Length: 385
Image 1 (tube, rainbow, N blue to C red):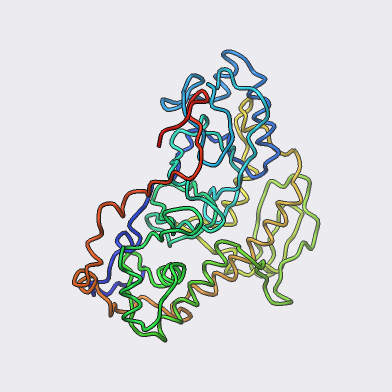
Image 2: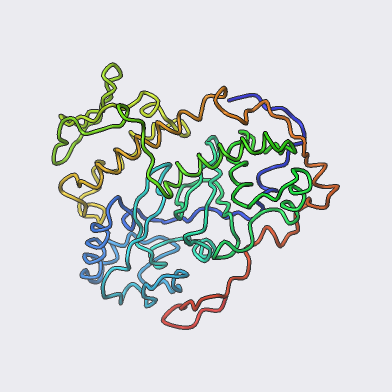
């Protein structure tokens, strides 16, 4: 872990003051790497009756067949008790299940122990969520994040990119010090490029250094969100399937000399060592991604309903993940970072206190009152929020 210069740099928690704990599911079967399996699991669940349905739910103190909860904001799942639930599966949504692992979730409040409705209310195509977990770099995603433990900092407090989740007055102060007005997403890009392991974020008044850091942060954002043009490695470095993957691979092996990833007898290459070695919190990302798709679930559970063969879509996702990790690895060495741990903060927390930006008002640490859409409460009642 790089050394930190103690220079009164402000904290991430003050720069992006509103944060929420990630959703807590309480059961694994409402999530999975493919949407079709989730729909099949739901069908099996609603066809079961009595004790069989209760066992399949995997009830917790927070959710049983008799729990009464409202709809998730922006979703159309039923609100009757699960003991009476019928009909088709709510359309699964894409979520970030683990670092760089995009999966699917049944968006039904009755299946989720702690759904964090305040996050669902602001989740749209403009939103960017920053994940702050201990012993891990900051991650950013456009998807609802399910990673635990840690905190989720949304970039915007309201849908439609309204009201940035930044300390009130921060943008005005940065404008006066930099000589130009940064957009909220530019501040986020700087935070991703400059944040230290202790979650202090040195701020600069040097426009040239700021521009370099923002440019690097935007590249991090592009790779982590996979937003817009799909990332590609230069010709000759792009990974391809060199030997067909089996119907259901069970082992993963990396050959460093050949730069080849072996899934049983299947082979993908070239796979740069930097992509294979890419870790978050000491866990190799490619191994974690593969294990999530081949781990044997407990027989008789809904999680046991899954693809019987390896879907082509997973191969495409794996090739893109290798590309993303290889490109991200190029930004990791300190000598390649335009904003490194040696940067000292020329805009200090003391400066922000003198300017009235800090301390942050208590209201800025709480969710905004979002009343733009109808939300159905338990048993079809109007939700009061």
